[in-house]
Image 1: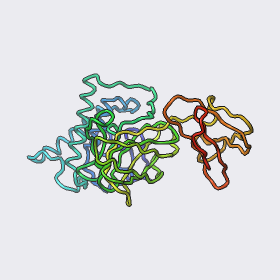
Image 2: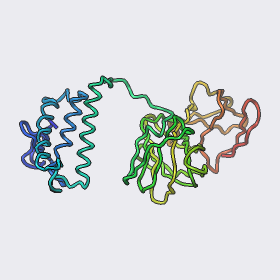
Image 3: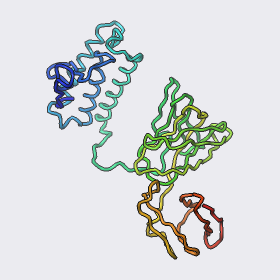
Image 4: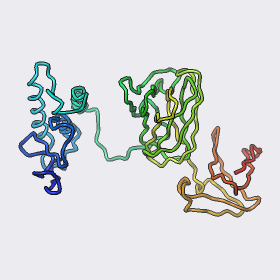
Length: 330
């Protein structure tokens, strides 16, 4: 914005930096099709830069630009007795442009208030990835005024969740999700329904949920087998062909134990394949030897074995505490 220069050509004349020294003007290096009268978004950016000190590498700090752009917005608002910022759509063609101004100003005010309260800290520490994430802390996405919203329910974990996915492209987005081989989704639904699951922006699969009899009080858990890389973004979205009507409580990623882990013991003849595509950690063990076995010791109420199924796979007996539980035909 301040120091990156766009030469003309190939960029639009006259060239230069996005912020113009000594002026509130904005240089649009590739033109602008939504109006050149929107200065408030830059004013808010300046304010956030000052509040959170992310202007430290700029040759001219945010406070300088905040004054220029802030005074311009004040001048715009002084043109009307109503205090509105824009007098025509040519300045900003966005239909809800005045509401956007209010939202942006509120964001800047909240940032300044947070700093004054000494209620934030700057750190270079890594952001922890979480295996369990509450839906009420996720990011709601909605295309209608009602929106996807947080609800309260004493039966929900933490007493709250996120619901009202009612319009096409409505979604709930979980960020910073830990890696693992499965995803548990705790939900309440008044009827059977279907949503689309995305991992890091890429469609994964359709997820079907059975009715719990209502949208609160009683919750079920849906387990989905999907490989989730560490620090992923997981999105549940209402796409064309899906069926809506769900409240989400939380998601949990299954704690993975890789086939190469120290606690996994192999007897007999096994092949360790470390270039297995579409596998967790891109590796797997397999055997074609009768009597070969693998043992994993754990403490818990459940365990899941994840492997490839095909017509040329074999059968395996599964024992828990020495008792045969199932014969798995892959």
